[in-house]
Amino acid sequence: MNELKLSKRLEAVASFIPKGSVLADIGSDHAYLPCYAYLQGMIEKGIAGEVVEGPFQSAIQQVRKTELDNVIEVRKGDGLEVISPNEVTCITIAGMGGTLIQSILEKGKEKLSGVQTLILQPNIGAKKIREWLLENGWELVAEQILLEDGRIYEILVAERGDSEKPYASKKDAHLLVGPFLAKEKNDVFVQKWTHELGHWKKIVSQLEVAAKTEANELKMKELGEKIRLVEEVLEVERS
Ligand SMILES: C[S@@+](CC[C@H](N)C(=O)[O-])C[C@H]1O[C@@H](n2cnc3c(N)ncnc32)[C@H](O)[C@@H]1O
Image 1 (cartoon, rainbow, N blue to C red):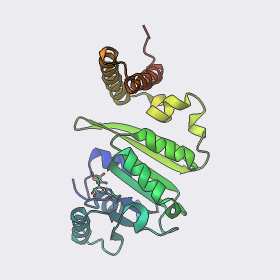
Image 2: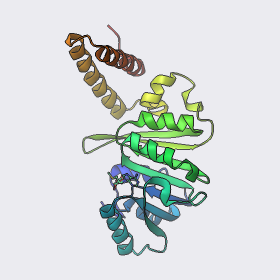
Image 3: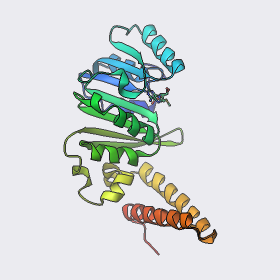
Image 4: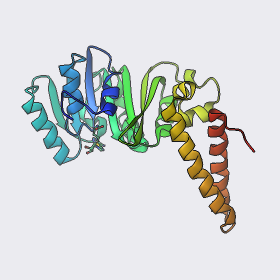
């Protein structure tokens, strides 16, 4: 992977960047994504944000090597603290857990003025992000699920708008699995949730024979509800 050839996952993230954006890529590591987006003519300029020294240095070297110092600025800092309000129009945050992405957005809320598009790629826990978007006036406008090297990734794209709109039906289920992904229901989506269902059912059967503690009962109830929601989406016949 380099600034000219991204992974399938990052290429899919980049494909959602509106042309002419001023981009902030948070947790940029090597800064491949903003460099690629500039070289492909997708963005006017970009900021690569990194909180850890090693990846921060890799980003600086990458930008220097590609001679993009005048258009891609590498900044060190935690989450959205590297940008100012009204400085960027699009933010990408990729390759982290959903809880971390959600906390970066929550902590940096005041930096989101002027931002029109959020492109978020959680490795796990996309539900946390959908919930945050819903509560904060960001309308989910597109989703993608893809398989790369045996791992499944989701991409969530949001714009300012009617955050309730994507959840007109099956709200709880769609917060969990994604309203657009549930509608498309492609092979990767079915693979992911079939696997999750199997995993949850295994835990439930273990809990059924475990001690009847309050915590176990609660866990069983939670899993039972998730199983019900996902089976409804997958249209699994219930026995
Ligand atoms: C697994 S890498 C993903 C890199 C790249 N975005 C991708 O998708 O391939 C996650 C990066 O996020 C950085 N990171 C984690 N928490 C961060 C935060 N709060 N602010 C900025 N960067 C962060 C890590 O240092 C790491 O370089």
